[in-house]
Length: 342
Image 1: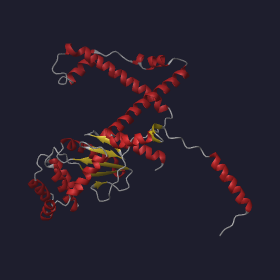
Image 2: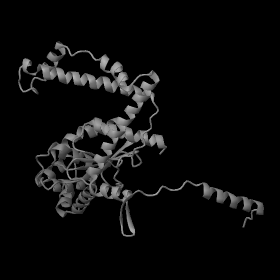
Image 3: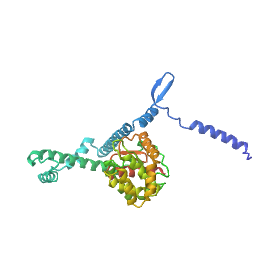
Image 4: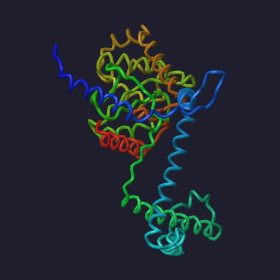
């Protein structure tokens, strides 16, 4: 046993006391309710909301994001106006409103020609004033975003508002593409018979092409009851995975979403070179029925009610979204990871 000199022990005791006395006091939990001698905290309320109403929780975060963006912009405008020695409204008038040019007749004519079908065949005279107002509004919006964006670029802004996240545990044997240790985990809940799931595929392909090894895509089955062939197709895809051809089979199913009868599922297996006998035996056995049910239960647990539904590092994105929607969240996540050094 190593024995410290008595002086070191005394100093150590003093240091411990100082450390204890100087430690910041933990903040008191914010109360939401008190029932007799028990309490319910706001943190507990939020945890329950996130679990039971994930869409409402997501909406709350998005509302906070909008409010935060407004407050940031207003503070930057006030700071800039103070430096210029003018009022905030005078600054906006000078830098935004006074820079706007009148909407020209040629711009109106061009817009009309490019959007004639969307305007329902109405003649130019009938809609030109509405087009003028729309283009003026768009010009104002563009000028505003350009000016405020410049203020943001020049400022040191660190947003620490955390988005809601689902904590999704993923197994190493689930159908996936990308490295197991990729910084971005993208979990997809999908239905082979859902047309919107099919429409999401180009955006997902672009994600994998653009981000490469930074993304791991995990596929989970969420066959909806309104699609009579979706569940068996889900089981068939796992039979294909058993022969290490999940993604090839997955692609074929989405190419033939209207033809997913049992005979079709068997034919697609042989078309891509699977052992047809083994595949048919697998599908007839129903041995992956429980796996599909498990995927369904996990999706329901995380609030999935329709397809496609995506979770990007736990952040929810629903519907057949364009690449830009995935890009926005992925870039934000990569930036967060770099900032905190994970």
